[in-house]
Length: 329
Image 1: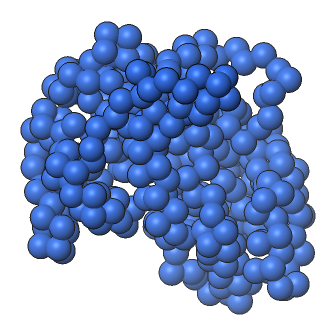
Image 2: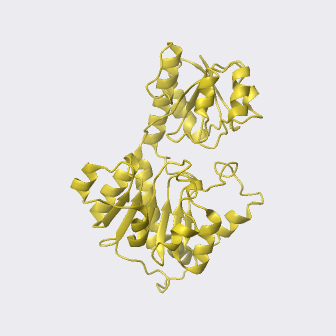
Image 3: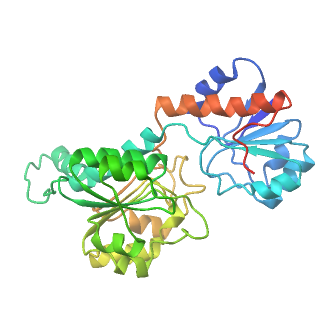
């Protein structure tokens, strides 16, 4: 089978080549998949996409015209793929349901600790030979109340780590996890109550119509003054304009995120010698109490290998005329 990998990056290509093991003809391009580039897949039976590719109806129409029959998503999230429309065009779609929840959970904790202990500011001061401590006061994690929104695979591991710190853990999920209740004393409560009680709010929920902009001026108003907010889910879970106002007022004491609602066309690209024209992003990055990373939470060797292996498991199933158990239906 001929497979075209859109939005591919050097850090993943060696893993993909190894997982392919010479079975399929693979083509890498760093171009994103969208309605303008979909025609370039002509001759390929399958395409593989990543989180910031645009696989909408127009893109799928172009893929169908190019006789593409399969779409493999190299991620767990698939909110950028209209898989139901793809089905209507006879195109199979599969994702990677789990690659390393530990990678994202550990990155989430890293953001919390780095913000709390002012590590970025401390390092900047250190490089300037400023060894004073006045602006570097943090707090003990032990005894703090953390609210986790979304306790799937990743959220469950975050709860486990935070329990080890001695945190009081609150959670909200449409499907409460009884194991977390028993093992880590996780207290499932309503979302508004979680906002009001948590010292740290951690967002680990999928993006859908219910969660889009769930963090807005109304929900922020219910939170404690000086709350720490962490987003390692999807950027559009947070209304960035409302977030900035809350940072300016001090309502939100610190913010850490591995995602940004308008990251498409920005993250995964080198802008070091270019001018960024996103005023909202520039304003957000100007705060000393904000720590952003460029959608790298998944980026461990374990995760990259698992993503590659499951991606080619899906492709191998299709090549054999079988349905993959990871197909989106």
